[in-house]
Image (cartoon, rainbow, N blue to C red; front, side, top):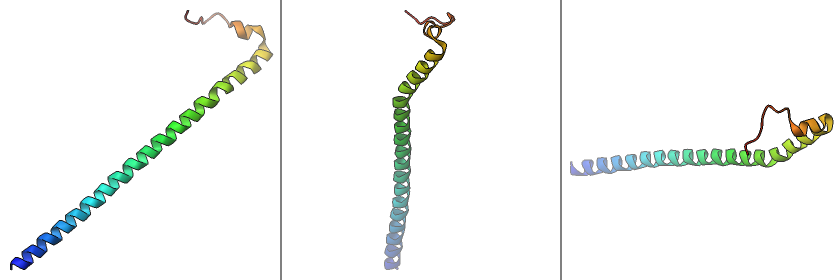
Length: 82
């Protein structure tokens, strides 16, 4: 009778370990996926910020050529802080 109990306990321990290992692997994969998403998002932001400055300057220059010096002085509705 003692052998059956030991076999049952060992089987239970192996099952619990396997289940715990599976949960651990799922958590690990989810964490990696979140980190990958965060990294991709950061790269997209970096790319956007690196290209937006020249894009804004190009649009400003284009409109400045069309409108002229009025574009440079503005309409007086906004004055930048000193």
